[in-house]
Image 1 (cartoon, rainbow, N blue to C red):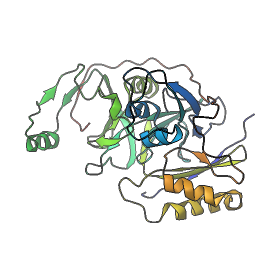
Image 2 (image 1 turned 30 degrees about the horizontal axis):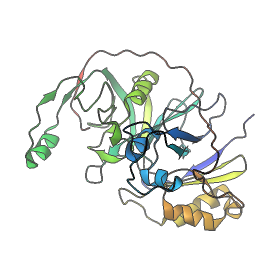
Image 3 (image 1 turned 90 degrees about the vertical axis):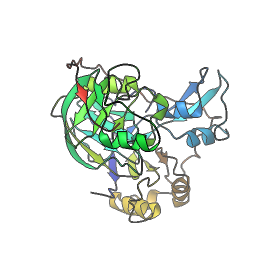
Image 4 (image 1 turned 60 degrees about the horizontal axis):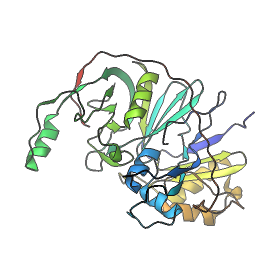
Length: 327
């Protein structure tokens, strides 16, 4: 039987190639894994990062590549997309962690994790509790006046309504939230995922939004949180995950936060604080071991393992609808 996890994440205000489910029983809050990816024709560091939920710079660093370096088809890349789910997630709940750019949904068999795009710093995704209020398949987008005005200032004119179809920025699925004007939806621009680029909405890859759409129901509760520093103890190892403070809401340094988390967990004496400081400096955005005697950061020269799995999905249907919301 898997040992229980202890996870704490510090709240400052208030995976994937495919979603990963943990095994039945106690959920494993450490999602994702380490695997290899064979570069396909046309792929870039940005497009691969968007699919797996890892910063392009992190993939480049692990694989000894220059930032923005073109990729030859057939090249093998080591991908580490381990993320720590926020500690407070309960069964049947969605949590979206803005600086982590990840959406987590906990169900009876475990936790699924999806990389997302969130609001840019000048058009932030709001925090708070919500409930799913509606679900639409093939929605039309009623363009908000604020977005039409922004486009007009750039010399571009947007229509009042964008009908369903391949150019609709909402994609094929819309999950409306009780937070005003905010929803979870797909996108025709997959490379935009795992970035802070939206007008406040939460954007997923096409297959991931379809999967989530089939899992949640009207009334499903959730929260949008802001937790750039997370820590967990798992199988005797300590993991630390650090993200940039994209909305500049931090009230203390990441190192101070890490020390507070370690103290709460009783892990201070088990951490190699030199490794922890290096991880904080990198802000690689993935969960890495910082235990005493922990191995070095994985690189492309190491072997790879896969920690993934997926359970069945519930079918879902929803009438066609239209939405007026940011994207």
